[in-house]
Image (cartoon, rainbow, N blue to C red; front, side, top):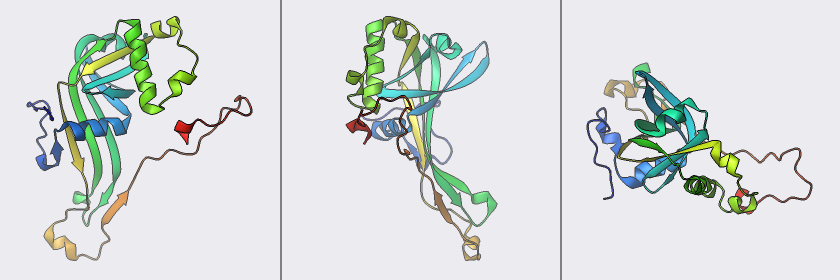
Length: 212
């Protein structure tokens, strides 16, 4: 299988031509976003929690303090909706109604479960580090048992998911194209600024290759 089979829950209903369900597109957006929002329900009250995430195949991971209300709830195997999005720019049209935005977004559904085995939790955290900074885990001091105990790692098999993408310029009413009004795209992108060293960094420690 190379794509998700959407149900009524995940199928894109509005402007369905912008939808994508293939693994390459969905996973690509999840990997590029790095930050997601986890939606869940506690006692009929909906919550959405922002968190860092990472992926391995068809499985998502996120983590946090063992005291977190969100993690206490979702670790039991409850249904969750995970969303991730990338803002690519404003779209300026010739009418206020047709202004829009270019974006890439994913909604993924599954059941969140706690990783109870400390060794598996540590392996999942290593995977996060390897995805972000390959080789850094081996440079760090070993993880302490109490640190693993204080960290809840949650995993979710993606049962179904959909991506929605908007690209390109404005789509105006045909009569409006003749109006003397500037229209087009104001692009946006996420950038990584220059490194800022810790003031307590020991002199002479070089910048690692994976940060250059």
